[in-house]
Length: 406
Length: 182
Image (tube, rainbow over all chains, first blue to last red; front, top):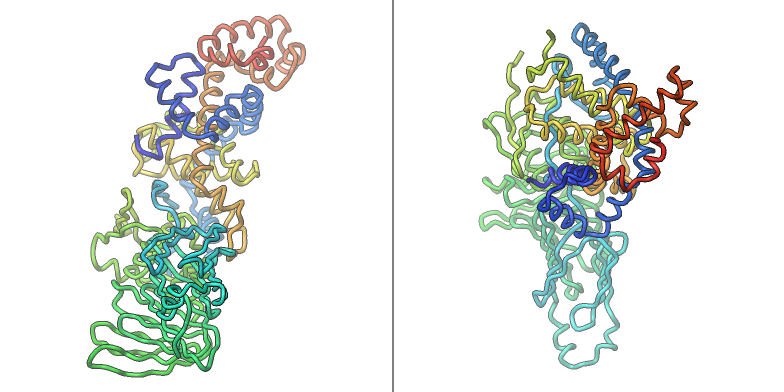
């Protein structure tokens, strides 16, 4: 019995029990389920209650299956003859979403739904692992936790799902060994797994939104004459202004020096490029590969791409919102190729994508979708406009060509 | 004879449709709290099922398909009718949860089977039982169905005997509902 089948199985067992037809083994299974949590017992009592049943049967009567069937039969005839009706439905559906205009209308004629992907693949949530300077790990889920770390000198807490730090007064920690220790910067690491996201406010007031499968290394306190952090994956930063202490973001190939600004950085290990998008302020990029110390200054609305294979920086003008919308709960694809789209979805929904043929990676899609939507919804939107289908099995989703290219 | 992509005859499909329709509407209503819209969504889901060749005729996969599709449609409905907010409301995240989904499958499936057992009674008999569950008295049922009060009583006895077999537990442990039967 797979996990999604359990509720059907449980309903069957309760029904059998009500009919007094339940076997001992089945009864054991049912009791195990009942005892697994108070909520199950509560549910059981609620739905086997005779008043609830009477009420439900009354409701069922309102949803008259015979009237509905007659309507359904008529619809079958109408839809077989004419397709305009479903066209209208789909257009209103599409209006909610930006869909490329070039979609062949034929695609809409039959709104075929694939079987819903099991609930194995779900949108990401607030989660991260905080690794302290002593190697201790704390799991974070956005709930209001409060604790002190680093020999009671630092206080961490979650406020509105943002991880915050509060430094205790130096005078209070007068133990000599502690003072000696605090001279060295203590680094913490915030690791966001696949299917996670998290936000943090550093002790200088800089806010950082971290996307799925990302990592941030930062000192608890910025003690030197600059503020340095390390980022892997994707992050949006609102750097607190401090003209005396420049803020430096280190990535595998580029260092970004900022004074006070908002920008997005996408630097995943398995992406071919490191993308920096500047929303406001000014940043300076420095290539750090051995043969290239190229420097570039970005102005707002500009994007710099460090191409990993050639180690060169390319600059272009972009709609910055496309690159920062993820922190506001959206998935924005602007004529993006399917290879890159699936990679982004994999990180957020935590699955593996497989392409039936490589050329499918080159299909392009545009759209603005809600990133907390069920994966089915996202894939539906893409398949409608890209002439493809998705097949899911466990955590694998395969992209296949739509059969019968009519 | 009209057949769909599973090679189910229309008659078979009708049986499937009628057996699940009320429960799926009630299930949809849990999400969107709108009877009319719930019925429309369920009609759509059956239409997709009729045209879907990828589903096997295995009853478990059909059930999963139906409940999952109705749920997805409802969640889409909710989200498409709301402005995308930075923070989805607690209510929305709670009804989007797998726990909510599973609890309501259990509830609806159980009640669907009970409903089905009653529906399998002789037609008049089932009709009388359903009216009596609604709280109608014997003379009221007689009036509604244009039959004599004695017929109502006789039919109730038949129902009583049959349901005792079909729903022993319900009969023994649910005095209220069976008081209404008698």
